[in-house]
Every structure is written in C-alpha cells, then in structure tokens.
Amino acid sequence: MKQLLQKKTDRLLITVKAEPDLMKLFLDVAKLSPEPVTREDILNPIREFLKLDIVDLEVLSDIADHLNHLEGNETEVKDRRIAKGVLPQTGADGKLLLLVKSLNSEVETEYEDTGVVDYKKLHLFDNIDTGKVVARIYDSKMGDNGYDALGRVLPGKKGNPVKVNLDKTLSTRPGTASGGEFNEVVSQGEGFLLNDNGRLLISNDLIVRGNLDYHAGHIDFIGSVKIQGDVLPGFRIQARKNLDITGSVRGENVLVTKNGDLNVAGFLFGGPDSKVLV
Image (cartoon, rainbow, N blue to C red; front, side, top):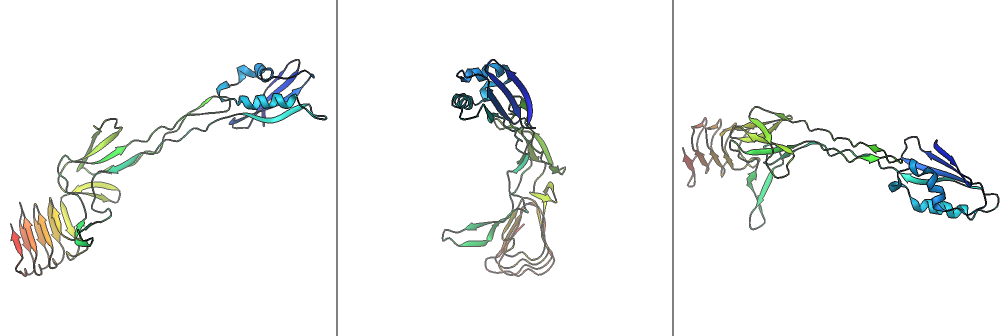
C-alpha cells in the first residue's frame, strides 16, 4: 500500500495509507502515551485530508477502543479500512426499438377460439403507411459518477452508441413523446419494414419465393405481391397494387387487387368459393 499522510500528536502516530487505485483507505494508529484515546483524537489530526461523509466513523471508534485496551506488547492498530470508494458506472448502450413488425422477425401465429392454431393466419409483417413512425433510436446514456476513497469524483462513462443504417425510404426526426430522448424513424413510403443485413428499409414489393402455402399463409399487403410458384388451395391474397403469380392458382382461392393488375402465368383452377376481384 502507498502511504499518503502521517501525523504525530503528543499521544498518537497516525498513518493514512491506500491501495494503488485509491479505492480503499486504511489507517495505522500507534499509541505514544498511556492516556485514553477518543475517536476525535484520531480524527482531528487528519480531518482536513478526509471526506468525512464517506469515512466509517464506527471503525474510528473501534480503533480508539482497541487502543484503550491493548494487551501485552501491543502498541498500535494496523491496516484498518476507514473508507471505500465507489467505481464509476458505464451508462446504458444506445438501442434501436422497432415499433412495427418487420418481415424477417419471428412469425406470429393466431389461435382460434377453440385453442387451435390456424396456420393460414400468420402475422408476417405490419403494413406501413407513409409517415408512420416505425422505430425509435435511443442514444447511449452517461453512467453515474463514482469517487475514490479520498472523495474525489471519478467521472461516469457513456455507453456504446447504436449503429443504425437507414435506407432512403426512411428518415429520422427528434422524438415527440414526453421525456423522450430519442429519434423517431419515419417511413417515406408504403410497404413493410425489412432488415436487409443490418440496413433498414421500406419495401413496396412482397415476393414469396416458391408456392404460397402454410409457410406464408394468407397475404394482405399494401403494395405489390409476387408469388414465384403456385397458390395452393384455400389461401387468400389481397394486394393494393399488382399481383403477379408465376405458377398456377389451384382450387378455391380468393385473389384481390385494389389498384393494380392481376397476372397469372399458369392455369387458374376455380371452385365454388373462388373469387377474383380486380
């Protein structure tokens, strides 16, 4: 340990020591006369050197009591810890909070009243309108300050910032919620949110690579839909824009386009409950 201070009075020799990082403070007190010792006798000579609100006064009282009851050849009390610092804290890291369901996030299923899952009703993504807030970007926070055993401030550290790569289909603006220290991510178009290898974007084209089956379920999309395969029986597709099917439509299906074209490259097999609305 490192000696920081030594004070001698007519009755005591007081040595203040610390660990190299100054996070713990220790005291050696040697008795030089037979007179009784009080806590103030120990504290007063070193009072200006210490930050009293972090000094353990009960330990000083215990040292005084020990000095008043020395046994045998004892003359001193050594290595008593009288103060301990607090390490500075690192603040929270920045984070990206999605407010909508992106296409490549975990698929959500829907339970019927009977408790059975209908795998045609899968929640793959949220439809997003222009101007919708899709995410919040929170800045990293400053951590709390600490202090060493002498009471000197140790500054807190800021957490790591979050790295967000936004496509031109998204913009940012200061958050508007009360007490919000964040930026809002705002959609500049219609579609769904996609995380493309770390880059966030809004896509207006939904592509199903293969047949439309229980992997995707019914589709209701604000943009254009392309099925790169067949539409299996019993599935519904609703697209606000174009609907392109490179295979065939098998059996009873419902196909709807509101403001676009419907193109089926293969055959369209109808049924009693089939519907095609363009």
